[in-house]
Image (cartoon, rainbow, N blue to C red; front, side):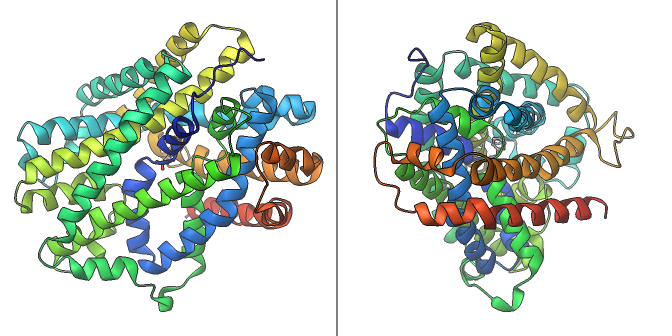
Length: 446
Ligand code: PHE
């Protein structure tokens, strides 16, 4: 197995894994959840989860990958034949997310192109977004471009593709985020938003806020979808695994917080301090923000910069999704990378088309009441992901000797938070995950 591709450095690995973690979840989903569930309080609960539950599951997944040097299905199989189904679920999650993530990635490219070419004003109209995504052809065109961009990176392999792209895109992403956040904070009336975002108002505390923060943590750290197992398999045995986890978490939480600063103060300034303006779900990024940009000086430019950074965030995430699928099919079917990438890319485009058409011409077709895109989102994030994460905890905590995993972490350096890890993976994490699963299913049933 020594021929397995590797990241050439720890920083390359951390950038790639952080690139996976930082995505639409941080920039669009996190600020809107924070606004919905009491600002600073949500942020606080979120950070606690990242440092406990997130740390535990990410460490477990990276260690499984590095220990076995295999992609998810093979990795779980190598540890225990009966449990290869966990790898199958994880790879399936990545396989099902990639297509619809690309549809949204396509929308982001469209907005970027529109703003940067000076047409941002049009996107601020109330019915622009709904009208655009309902079109049959243009969104599919941009979706294909997004998949092609992802393909272009993944086909070049771990070191020359994924690592190189991440090392270039992630620092640019941070710089652009800082720039937009500072600009947003200095809008007149923005300070009320800053206060709202940072001040933990405990009277807002609710069980739903806790569950939402936990669900967000899973999604945002790209857990339980085979990605961290795959990337772990490319991590050299010499590198400090625990420290890498810390850096990835820092990156992810940092960009989520920056996104809060980019979006919440600007929307407050725009709406005259009304937090309800943030509570627009998917509309926040594509409907409310364009109006905010249009109200600013240099709106087209700022909007262009913002959608460019969103695009980079989405691209590094879709790269990780594609890689998780490609590494699985290549390992399982003994395909070479090129063949694996091309087949996965074509399937991703074809499977994404219903999610795109479901916004318009196929909107009358529903599965359990969801349109295609929402259905794929629900089945992956609300059902398969918690199920996979639950079995990962049971497997590592109770079936496998936990020592096999902790020894892998200790290969290069002492495992400082070992006690926390064991307590979490055996007892606390499984209970938390069952709570998420039940709540999201109940929510879906209305
Ligand atoms: N972690 C990504 C985010 O925060 C989401 C993601 C989901 C990435 C699935 C890859 C795969 O947006």
